[in-house]
Image (tube, rainbow, N blue to C red; front, side, top):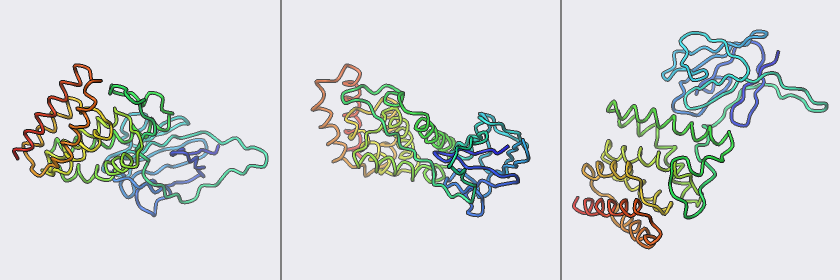
Length: 283
């Protein structure tokens, strides 16, 4: 039986024997992901069986939601998570006349894109998950991968490892901001998730740039920050100085122009943001 490994839009045919998955270019499947160890896991293909084994990686290997502690048999349809990347073991590819099945060579694949491509319609309210409910399965996995990485960063922050959390999130957060600057519309639920984390980074690292990051993303969204993000920003403002007051005031001015369309909850959030601006101006 020929097995395949599905990663992103790639179906990679597996031959019998072992192949390694990790960040090193020496692996058969090289993944550009900071959560992946240099030699993270090994798949062993033998006849009608496939085993996956963790290679003493830092973040482990998860099969169908369970972290494995020993060589584990996987079957077609099983999901293997390595770092923030999801791979699916597939059954044999059906041959079609005139179409050759690609063999599996060494593959170097970049980190899973983390940016959703669907957003709510203009004027929609920012409820969790809105703008993401109609994503295809591939895009949903991309959003989940981003949140998985954020979960690891949250744990690092809780353990007082601000530098590690910042290192993990700097690239994906930068990518998200770049996409926003290019005019891509981003799902509000994802923006709320990453902005809360960015506000925590501002507080933990004492860097005003992370607070400015939050303001810029919500200014592009044209809506007030939700209460949990404002709470984190208030914590940050008390610990950092140098927040970009011009940007913050421009954001507030844009919200005031839309205030007539706001409901009571949004007006209250706007009042809290005004208080945040007053606090930042005192720093």
